Image (cartoon, rainbow, N blue to C red; front, side, top):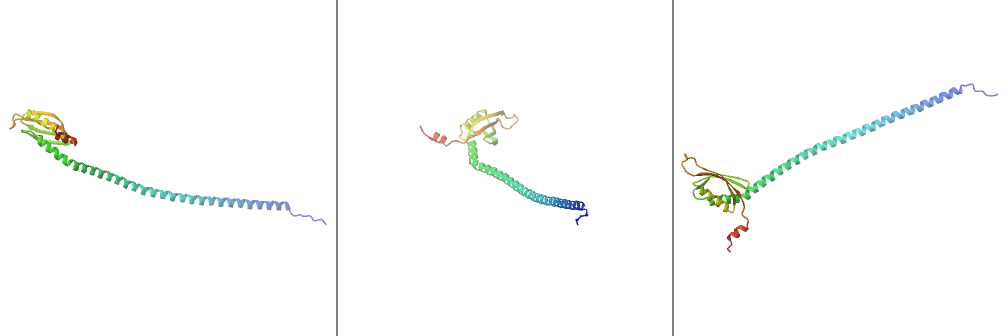
Length: 193
C-alpha cells in the first residue's frame, strides 16, 4: 500500500524556517549588542586613556610654567646684577678720573675765584661760582680749555653780585666737558723739538 503522509509538512517546514529565522535574528541581535558593548568599552577605554594623557600634559605644562617663571626671575636677577656690576665697575674705573678732574679744577682756579657748586652728569660738569672780576672768569675759562682732562668750557651766565652783598664781584655759571687725555698727548707735550 501506498504511504500517504497526512502530517502538515508545509506548516512544519514553515515553523522550522521561522525558528531558524528567529535564531538567526537573535544571533544577529546578540552579535550587534555584543559589538555595541565592545565598541562602547573600547571607546570608553580610549577616552579614559586620552583623558589621562591630557591630565599628564596639563600637569607637565603647570610644572614647565613654574620653571619658566623661575627662569624669568633668574634672568631678571642676572640682568640686575650685571647692571649693578657695571655701575660698580664704572664707579671704580672713574674713581681716579674723578680725583684727577677735581685736581684739575683746583689747578685751573685763578686767584680771586671760588666755586659755589659743581654738578657732574655723564661727561658734562656744571660749575657755579663767584669771581672778583670778569677778567678772572676769562682766565678760568682759558685755564679750563688748556687742561688735559677738561675741554670746551661754555659760559652760560655772568651777573654782578647785588649791591647789598658784603663782597663785590660776579656770579657765573659755566659748563665744561670731561675728557681723558690720550697716551700720546703727554709724550708730545713732554717731547723737546
